[in-house]
Length: 293
Image 1 (cartoon, rainbow, N blue to C red):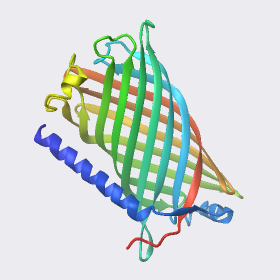
Image 2 (image 1 turned 120 degrees about the vertical axis):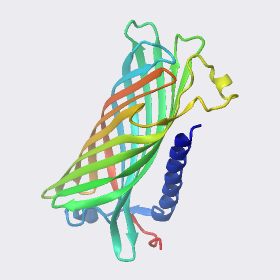
Image 3 (image 1 turned 135 degrees about the horizontal axis):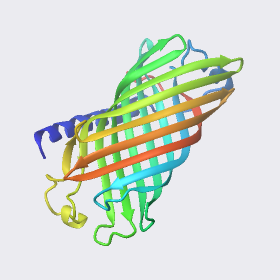
Image 4 (image 1 turned 60 degrees about the horizontal axis):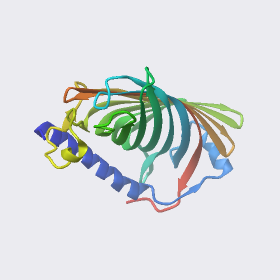
């Protein structure tokens, strides 16, 4: 493993360990807020800062895959995903600070087939991430910017490849995280328009050598399989455009999700594109434990 790869790996691991510590310190015990509290949170002045916001979104859409470890052909199909998001603000003795935290956990299942319809690739993945950043309120806008560390673990299985039927995806990335939310109130109904953009900056990824079997790779050194990733060999975009409607104590969310990733190493090329539309629920939770000091 090169020195740059080792430094990037240690940096992201430190952020993830810090994230786990923060979650244990800040997000301890919560209760759902009352109807009046949810309506009050629709006001721009309160801006949901005293609360932890949780949402669950189920989405469905198209999927495009390319994995030259398994096949040189392109695969098209469908996928279904689950997004679980938790976000809130740090607190101090004076109240809530403008520093926010965010946790997104994603599970995806996809089924694709190549253009000649001679083989299929089934895709499974799970992603855990945690980010910290600064929030600024400007009239009806909430603008947030910060860093986001994510761990992706995935697996693809090919129905026709006899020698290598499985390809694993593993990546640890530090991303730029930017989100803009616009709030609009209609009597007892509130409308939230939000766009969240994430771009990969640096990280570490696992890419096997072409033709190498996984059981042999696990017995040998991992030097040739772990790679430092940045803009030169890994590009991508995560974008979530969401529309939330708050009806008293019920908040509904519509989501348009685009996830495009492209990476290369060991003369192999990989790409994944998800284009999903989702629907879910949002819940405001209030911390009922004592503030962390």
